Image (tube, rainbow, N blue to C red; front, top):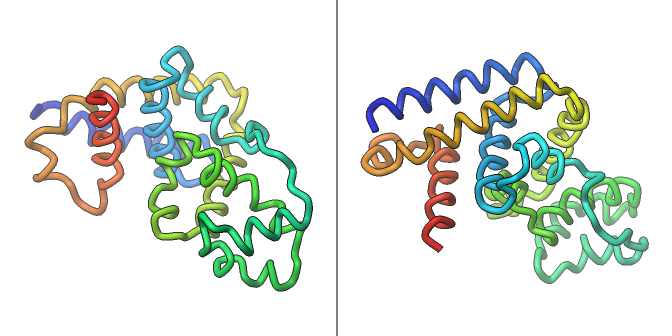
Length: 203
């Protein structure tokens, strides 16, 4: 346990340094995304590589959804019974009938809120809980653009897969007694990921 804690800290630090050199969006966000993808790999897609899971679940062209008509699109934002705060969050676009903007945002929200894909749900759970839908869509879009740019880059994908494998190797070693001592706002996501792994393992 004692040796696992500095290993995890070093791993997260190395992940941020590694990805800050190769990706066009915040490296810390990618580290969180790879962590989430590693969980998805272990839970339901264990035969897939981490990079393949990221591409599968975060690129908008992998989102399967019915293209809504203009009226259906407006209804999704304006009168959504499941997520009524969408109307407030996108009030300006609705009032101005900015269909192009609403249509652009829709796939990201649909993937998280309706399809409930595992990686986006875990990655954006805080924005969903706080009904910060505009922030969710903007972050999701930035990540998707970044993944699209590195898609097919074997070197980067190999590095992502190696990072995911290393992360899985140490996560199970650091929980226990270290949770109360180390859990803080700065590393909250790390422990939420471990909580999720334990919950799935015990189910």
